[in-house]
Length: 476
Image 1: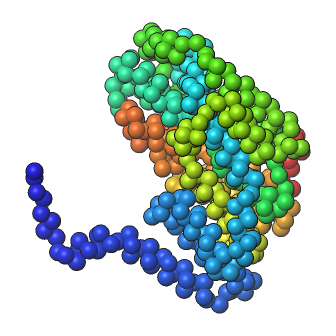
Image 2: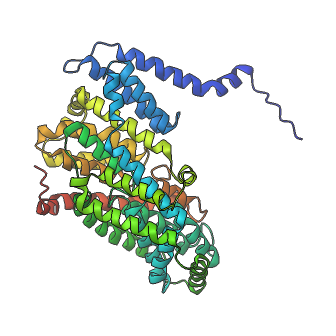
Image 3: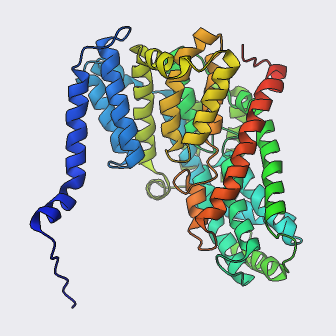
C-alpha cells in the first residue's frame, strides 16, 4: 500500500476539515443575531424573523451545505421556535394537499418505470420518427417532451439516457467531436425540460407553486386550466428548440441504419406488453382524464391517492418498489418550502421585501410580470427551480394586489420560467444527465442554451401579452 503523508501544518488541516462546521455555526449565529434586531419601519418582529429564516434557507439551498430536504425541515422547526407562527399552524401546513399530489404523482411515475411501460412508450415513439438522421433527433426530442408531460422530467431523462447512449455508441460517434451526438443528447435534455412545464407532472415545482398559491390566497389552478395556458407556449418552444438544433448541429448527414437496428433489438427484448403494463397504462390514462376534467370537484390529491391505491390493489407495485423509485426527500423539501412561503407572506415580510427590492422597478403591472419572469428564468440556472418558486412566488403574490394582478397569473409567471433551465448542469437534472454522457462540453450547453433561453423569455412574454387575454388571463 502507498502511504501518503499530509505535511500541511496542523492548523491548516483542522481548518480544512472543520470548514463546513465553521460555516454552519456562523450561519446559525448570524441568523439568531439578525432575528433579535429592531425591525425597520413597516416590518413586524415576526416578519424580520421570517426573513432571516428565509435568507438562511436560500443560502443552504444554493450551497447544498445541508440536503434540500433537511434544510426544509430546519426551516419548519425555526418558524415555530422563533415565534413566527405557532407549532400547530406550521406543522398543519405540511398536510397541504399539494404534498399528497406530489407523492401520488411520484408513485404513479414509479409504476410506469418499474413495469417498463415508460421504456416501451419511448421506443415506440422513437421508432415512429426514426426514419433518417434528422427525424431520429426529432423522435428523441419529442419522446422526451411527451413523456415529461406525464412523468418527472428527471425520471424521463434518466430513462432515455441509456437508449440514446446506445445509439451514439452504435453509430460510433466521437465523444466531444460529433455534432450529431451532441444534438442527440441536447435533444434528450431540452425535450424533457420543455415538456416538464406543460402539466403538473413534469416537475414538482408546479404543485409546489399551486400549494403556495392556495395557502397564501385561497385560490387554485386546475389541471386542464394549467395545460390550456401553458401547452401552447410549450409547443412553440419545442418548434424553436428543434430549429436551433437543426441550424447549429449537423443532424442530416448521418447513416442511422445501425441505430434503427439497435432500437428494433431493444423492442424485441421487451417482448409483448405484460398484464402489469396494460393495467398501469389504464390506471394512468384514467387518472390523467380525471385530473383534466374532474380536478375541481374531486381534487387533484384525492385522484392521485386513489390511483396509487389501485396500483397496490392490483399488485402492480410493491412497497419495496416505492422505496427504490420514489425520492421521499423531495416530498419533505416541498413541505418545508410551502411552510416557509406561507410564513413570509402571512407575516407581511414578503410584501415589505417585494416593495423594497422590486417595487421601485415595476412601474406597471406588465413591468412586474416581465421582472418576475426574467428573474425566474435567470436564477433557475444556478439554484434549484423549486427553490426559485419558494423564493419568488411569495414576493409576487404579496405584490399582486398593488398592481391589480390575479395571484393565479403570478403563479404561472414564476413557475413556468423557473422550469426552463437550459444552460448549466446544476440548473436541472436532465442537463446534468446529458453532460454526463461524455459527448458534450459545458460550452455546448452554455452557448446554445443561452440562445434558447433568450428565445424562451421572448416567447413567454409575447404569449402573456397576446394569448393569455384570449383565454381570460389578463395581466391587469
